Length: 431
Ligand SMILES: Cc1cc2nc3c(=O)[nH]c(=O)nc-3n(C[C@H](O)[C@H](O)[C@H](O)COP(=O)(O)OP(=O)(O)OC[C@H]3O[C@@H](n4cnc5c(N)ncnc54)[C@H](O)[C@@H]3O)c2cc1C
Image (cartoon, rainbow, N blue to C red; front, side, top):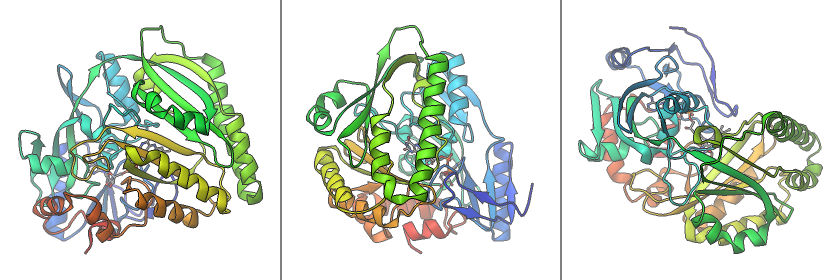
């Protein structure tokens, strides 16, 4: 146990000073911490790896890190039970060693599995769901100190709430994930124009396993990434890949970003240059090594899910607004596609979806840009990513989620005294 510790998130947009910071090493310990907290009238929050942009984790009471609660517990065919604090990169390596892989991942792999699942983290691929759809059973300690196990077959309502619950039902201790036999992917990084990309969007999206693209504001350039399953021998790119990923994509981008921060008037030109010099490459390797990219340049982010059919109109409107205003923006817009699902608080609930993310370099003003983008997202039935910034109220959210009331009922049943609530969760769920 350590006290008086400061916790901050990756982006520097959340910070807290919990009175007690704990690193439990077993499920029994997690359960007894919750029981003690109930007895003493304390609140409890749990941190993953702090890669959410919102104030989800903040508490001045008890904060748990599950960094010492990692690894695979049990394997049954392609169903793997993991400790909730397991780092996604570590999980990828452990799965690979037993001949398995995850169906899809986001573009980084340093989150904890429970943190990523709990906020609806997604990758891209219109035939593939977000990470929570890979989860088939969840065990968690609820606000009464009980250990609850739920799945499609057992306590279905609790399961549909727990799959994406932003830590509001309790502390997930274990989850079973449906994996696939390990597989290799070929990644093609290429460039095109805005119009060409939108004209061919349907085929790019539906005829490839994973498709995403970045649009560089104030330019006509898009950089797209396509991945498909391959039998090719792994071809990593060695030192050239390192030079490209670390020196070019991160190092030079960092310098450009600093120039943009110090002289905001250069942003437009920098956005164009970043697009112009973005990389084109092909590489093949095992899936868990393909999805993640290295992100050394820090930023703040808003990301919205919209129904896939509104994507083109929405993106064109965002582009027009960006070109009209002076946001001093040099980060691209990231566009991804995800299959609809049946998880109650999933932004992709009952709709095949597109996700559009907007970013601003750390230290630069983002409020007006994000608010203006949000107004457009809302027009297209947007639902925000739970780990990223948004300015919605409980009333706005209730209107967007058909199962909002049912989620609430489960939350109150699981945590009647609100021991897992913090100010941020109150700002989402109401008092
Ligand atoms: C550089 C960067 C890249 C990103 N890329 C993507 C991407 O490609 N796709 C995408 O969808 N998102 C992406 N994200 C967002 C990120 O995946 C999510 O915010 C994710 O939740 C972060 O995981 P974490 O382990 O850091 O969790 P944290 O941010 O620490 O916590 C997130 C939430 O999960 C809860 N939680 C954590 N552990 C538990 C547990 N054991 N039981 C119950 N609740 C728990 C926390 O209380 C909190 O509410 C990115 C973020 C960054 C900073």
